[in-house]
Image (cartoon, rainbow, N blue to C red):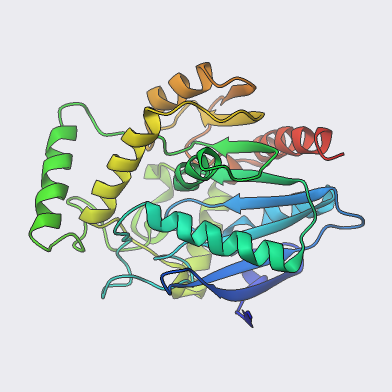
Length: 313
């Protein structure tokens, strides 16, 4: 059984979306959402968002998917959005182990199966969602194709700083301090803490202002920097994924030319050897290509939806 959950349609400005509470196998309450296709559905797109994000942020992407004939399912991962926060300070992004996110995916998949959402299934995954999505694919998730946006298959940490990041996060975990925020990170939501001129996410002021309006109107959407344990778990998962071959399915990967958050070398290495995969560079874009200027968003969404449509029969 699932109970209705709140959804801020006034902020999302997207298609009609029904939100529900589901529970992971370890008892974490998660928020999932379902928007139905306009007309007969070609299939269903699962949207795996990034760290700090929440479903309403992708209202414009959901609208494009629905208008193109796809159902869309979204989720707030554990520790963010309206899903359960995991440490006493709700502004610190925390997870004990990235394997926990696969429990979230399992709950989302069970929800989709119970609602009998139309097949085939497709994946859009951004940043941390790309880490979760790649692991799900490697574990046999039944997606027909995937689109990745600046996937976090590595974190952009300078080679001289990486050993310190590993050792500090490891020591903090051993000392029971893994819940503390990583050094240099702010506990404020990024759009409120960083001026548009200095932000690393987008070159589009309107989209950045939207992000700020969201966390001001709904403070529960806000999330600050990651915990030391999140950092340790993320580095461990990225290193583990890097040793495994890419799954056998068509995939597009978009990467902004001004990317500075994720490790672009890891992305290039994987996409070079992904049979059926294609890396597309977006000139002038920053980390969030789906939150860039309208022409860029149309380019990225259009390419993904064209691929999915070609495989939907």
